[in-house]
Image 1 (cartoon, rainbow, N blue to C red):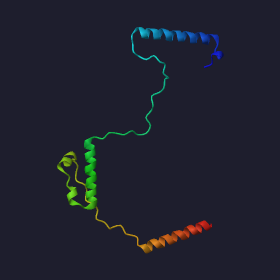
Image 2 (cartoon, rainbow, N blue to C red; image 1 turned 90 degrees about the vertical axis):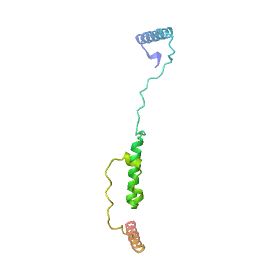
Image 3 (cartoon, rainbow, N blue to C red; image 1 turned 30 degrees about the horizontal axis):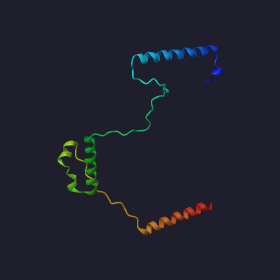
Length: 131
């Protein structure tokens, strides 16, 4: 704010406001308040962006751990790991998980088949580079 660019009415208003501020500060000091009267810039409260960390209860963590253990047990076919301890069983009151599907094993690519695919890809990229 440049004082030289203000009109006479605006200057009078500035002086009036400053006098009001001084009067209020005097009142505040009479009350014996220990509040700081230093002017602070008014800013909006910072908005949280993104997701903050959420707290999870011990019960929820136990449920997740038991479910993960059961999944790995089904994956491995390990009978001993399927039996959850009594503490976990008390927390989880759900039906048992469905049995794993008995399907074919995933086919493994032979080295010869892989070599054929690599050769075909190289030929295709060479043709594409040529134009």
